[in-house]
Length: 207
Length: 229
Image 1: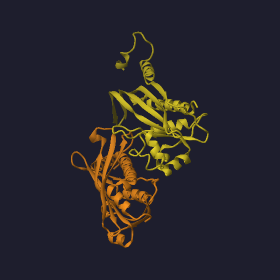
Image 2: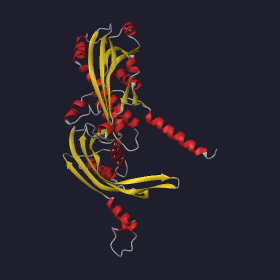
Image 3: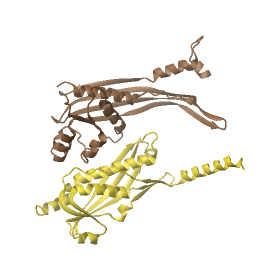
Image 4: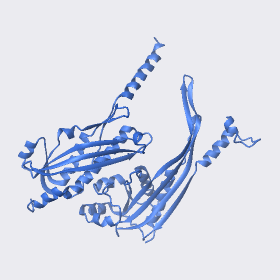
C-alpha cells in the first residue's frame, strides 16, 4: 500500500497536467475605468445593452484548431459604458428593451454592439506584444426608435510580453487598454460623427 | 572543469572558478551615457509638481510603465526631491485626454488641450509645471549558450552557460506648462552584458542596464528641472 502511494500521486499529477494542458483557458476581462472629463451634452439618453454585448465572448483557436482561450469581455464592456455614458450626457437611463426605451420619453436611444474581436499572441506573431482589436457598431436612435446614426468604431490595445506574467494576465491587460481606447475615442468623437453632429445641430437650442 | 582550466595561464595557482567568476562580475558592468539638450530656462517652485508619462504610440514597442515609475520614484526621493504625480493617477484623472490615441504629440497640441476648461483645471489642481514624456525601450540581443537542468531521485542540478546583451535607449522631452513649450530633451543610453553560468546551481550575473538608465535619467532630470531660471 505504501509503495503504491507515490505512483498513484504521480499518476494523478500527470493526469491533471494532461487535462489542464488540453483544456480551454478562460479569461474574464476585469478592470476599472475612469470617468471622462468632458462637458456633458444636454441630452436625455436611454441605453440598451443587448444580450450579444452582455454575454460577449471570443474563442481563440490554436494552430491545430483546438480551443485555446475563451475571452469573456461582456461585463467589462458594460462597466466601461456605465462609467463613460453618464459623463457624456446630462441624463442616462439604462433600459432592457426598445419598448421600454420608447416609453421612457428620452431624446435618443443608444445601442452599442461588438462586431468583431481579434487577438494576437506573441507565440503566433513573433512580436513581443499581446494585441487586442475590437470593432464596434454604435447605433443612435431617436426617442421614438427612428434612425439617427449608425457608425463603426475600432479600439486597439497592446501590452508587452513580460517574464513571469501569464498569457491570461497579458490578454486581460491588452483588452483593458483596448477598452480604454474605446472609451476615449467614443467620448471625444461622438459629437463629431457626421449624422450625430447634424442631428445635434437640428435640435432647438437649449433642449 | 577541463573547460574552465583552458582559460588559465600555465602555472597559475588561482582557482579557476574564482577567476572566471571575477571576470564575469567585471563583464556584468554597465556603461551609461547621458546627453542633455536645453531649449529654455527651467525652475520649479515648492508647490509645483511634475508628471512623467510614457509614450505608447509606437506599433513595435511601448515605453514600460515600470521604467516610468522608476524615474518618478527616484526624482521623488532625496534632498532635492521634486513632487512627481504618479503616471496612472494623472492619466486616470485626465481621462480621456492622455490615452495613447488622444495624448498631445507636439507642444502645438497643448494650446488646444489647455483650451478645455476641465483639463486646464485638473492640471492646475495638480500644480503641474512640467510634463516629461519618456520614450524608449530596452532591447536584448546576442543571446548565446545554453543551460540544461535535470532532476532525479537523488537530486537535481543545472549545467551550462548563457550570456546576453541589454541596450536601453530612452529620451525624456520636457514640456513647460507655463509657456506651453518644449524646454529640452535628455537622452540616456545604457548597455551591459549579462552572464548566467550554471554548475549545479545557476549563478545569475545580471547587468542592471535599465536600472542604471533609470537612475542616470532621473538624476539628470532633477538637475534639469531645478536648472537655470
